[in-house]
Length: 114
Length: 113
Image (cartoon, rainbow over all chains, first blue to last red):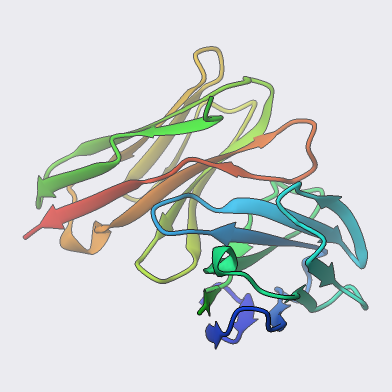
């Protein structure tokens, strides 16, 4: 257990539905990241926050994706109008800025879009 | 061109062997390089982190080296055990892109008893 929690662990949804995932980082970490991973590939960066500010977004993050970290603690990732291509493992990670930037990952949310 | 490449994609060895996993990356202007382990269906566990000013890091049976000039890192696993079976991923943090990690596709390691 790395101390980063993600909920739910698995999500099955129908195409066109909206889904929301939650991530609780290690409490003293001020940076929080979202990555997406498909089978046989390494994780791909989606976005990251420092405290409550979203500092960087990947071009992979289409308009259907939105992430928030309202109080600089937990974060949510919402996907609207899901498509089958959104099926993947969504990973959250946290780190402490200013140090060696070691990332601690959660166990991920596996999304299946039918 | 893939920014981070890992060779081999899969490796199967008998228990007790020493082995080396390879990672190569474009753009030597990195902040750090990290090695992770991932078990099937699980998240990533950080194994070793090498700062750009360092050449290697060691933890137990694991040793990771970094050669920025050639754009290469290796992960050495001594006396492999069946419990080492997992996918090993390397990731670079480019100097000018915040804390974004760019991952390779991983090496799937199987250690046979």
